[in-house]
Image (cartoon, rainbow, N blue to C red; front, side):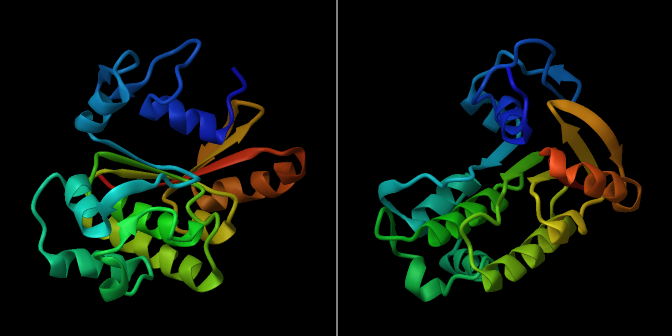
Length: 205
């Protein structure tokens, strides 16, 4: 298997299976567990290309993701944080009438509301405009303050790497370096032209 950044994220979530090795969460081997069981164990995942849910409103999707009843006010606050006007979206159906950028922001909101042990964002900046990207940085900063788990952000954007507590540098499927931004950034600049992959992990707890 050609292990790149997105492939590694999908292996952690159970979307793809690894050829060798194990996926360990809280000291337990979850390598053979299904996607839904991994989600129950506390792993959240946001795809590069968000999924549509015909017949489900944004508000219903947020409640399903949170796995608890949340008030409309709370749902609206979450939507506002990802750059959506709550009154225009809270009752919208999650279907093809929404743009790629809108679906992306809704998905980020659904992942953020779960408060998982491990939350994985696969290139969250893809398909969104500059204003939304700036707001996205703040969303991640806010998540770091309130969640007890770990956020893994897969990105090529230096501004996202800047907020990471730790950066993992992947090159040709192998871990080349792990460290702080100051420790790893020079290596990233050296290897960027070779098509290396970067994962920025902002960790709490």
